Image 1 (cartoon, protein in one colour):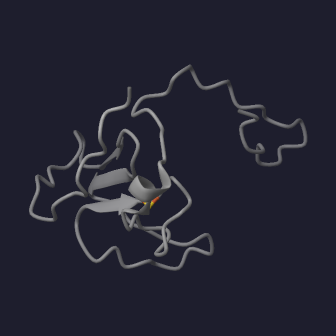
Image 2 (cartoon, helix red, strand yellow; image 1 turned 180 degrees about the vertical axis):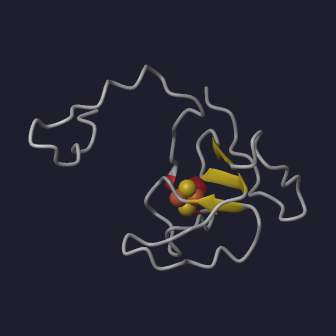
Length: 106
Ligand code: FES
């Protein structure tokens, strides 16, 4: 039985930085990735994306209408994912030619 998804983050919620001053990214069970702390959001071309607030929810279900941000659609879509990995991440495979590794096969 899965637990209900948490409410989206409240912008007034604790925005405490990660130890060392970086960002903390929390995969919420059956929900988005919550990013708190000191972070910069950019598209794949490096252009800044205005997060609009200090704490943001990034979609990981793929159903949001405002990607990369979460709009709550994961609840209606029945998205299900644990907060922590269900199994260890396999080691990255580094190609011999030095090219960037491909996506995890998992
Ligand atoms: S995780 Fe919330 S809409 Fe995708």
